[in-house]
Image 1 (cartoon, rainbow, N blue to C red):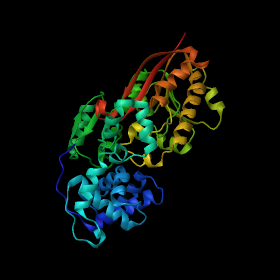
Image 2: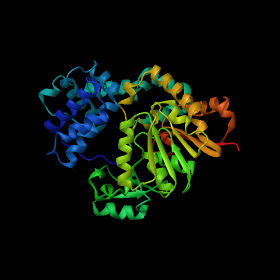
Image 3: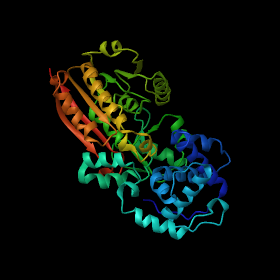
Image 4: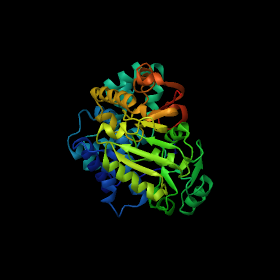
Length: 408
């Protein structure tokens, strides 16, 4: 964890954070969108002020259950979220609170005593719904405790150098000119920011020299090992982070078909592809089963980055643990297996397929692959290898990926 810098509390910044928290928890909006909106509507805020608003909001979202327990009730008003922010600063920074009217009724000694008592209960200490704590413990056993703790650590910002336009070393030098220091770590193209900064305003980003993509996510496309000139299908492309990585590994040569059920996501992918200089990407909306069936037995490589619970990326999407429900995960498992069964015939004989999720649950990962291999469509495939990444394993996102090959 980075060393904490001494801070002073400013009412205007806390008001922005409290308003953001109200929108997230009382209006049901997504945290990343709310913070984006909040920062856009505070244009005079400097970089430190913007970081304060974003970090305070995310940390209260991360520890919402714990802070609500300390508060003694579920927050209903913006004033309640002011108090939750205050509790956060007492817990996270051991701060004394200014004598503001917004903090009236809070007793620092009592807050610290409650923190000590609540720390004995894992689900409250790590701030997670009981059902999710029970599910994680059932599926991961003794590994769950450390996993859960790591999922509450703020996520680093990791970049992927776009080798269609640059190298990691050259990108590192270009970013230094904009005052952004990075460390080369892990995968061949990965750079980790030394401190969180807005990289989207840099010339390097506008020129398409990099994408923001976590360390673990950068392991997926190389596992599929696409080669220039191949026909590759990314069947759950979404906004296209892994699609763009595949295009770079293919050196822009061959055919890369990006599929998704949501047209707006593919629109976003096309914009990103233009910036990245990835000219071999073709997008197709899955508006019927025919779109998938027309591709049967045609692809050298198939990526199935399927919809999942996202539990491996709770560090960067902490509000999702409050939106998830048990029935949602059941529905996702059914969708995952349906995609495996109905999309896998896209691979031609001798071709390869990667099944990937950003989940850490075996029931979404290796168990799904085994169920598929035992099914009729799966009999044509063989499991070559798999990677199971928990956040404590490498310090980054939790991920799963399995590499399968289709018999000749």
